[in-house]
Amino acid sequence: MTVPDIDAFEERAAIAEYDGGLSRSEAETLAARAQGFKNADAYWQWLADYVVTKQIK
Image 1 (cartoon, rainbow, N blue to C red):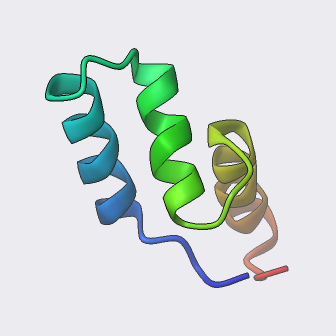
Image 2: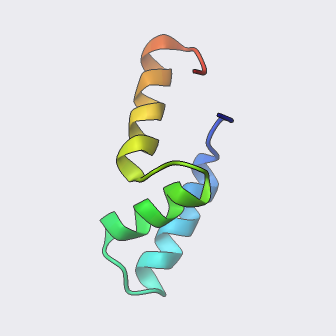
């Protein structure tokens, strides 16, 4: 897995929420899937694991 692009994630989620009328949760899932994650929970878990371990898995 490549390192997620946090800026792209936030931008895509914001656009999907604001322009697309999605809930924040739905918008984050859409943004996470665009980067190859199953859902937003998987995206946030990857980032949390990286912060703790400082290793890309």
